[in-house]
Length: 166
Image 1 (tube, one colour):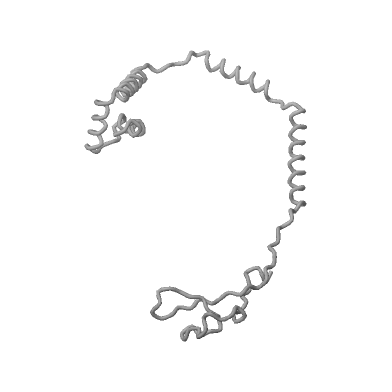
Image 2: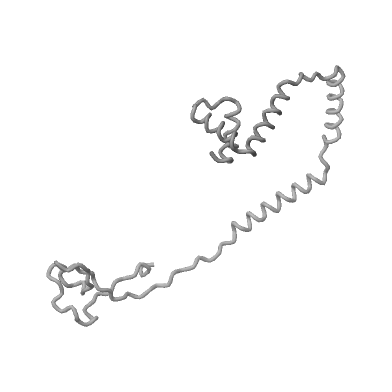
């Protein structure tokens, strides 16, 4: 077990929420071997036991009256919002609305893709018994193959690029 795992699951271990014997042995073994986690465990157990052993604190009978008087004073001091704060808030809202309106009116130009001319592209054809694909004239039969594979480029058919219709 690493110290990070120990610290991550320590609360469950200390509170008795871990019930699996294997996990309990892992935690006990780590505490026995790691001095830093041993100090952490001891300090936390001492702190929890001191808190549990402490007596309940009872406020004095005057405490409630003094607390109510103090709260009333604080509410009175901060109850009114200065006029400058209201004006500043109104100006802020007006500026925000102006920016939103300006952004809505302004439209950046959209870039247009250039129209490309058709280009000749040979059709791929698979030959029987050949482990690769060759490129031939698209008018040639796929099954028969091209009788003249070294023919001139004028036999190829232009293929429209994707941007040609735009």
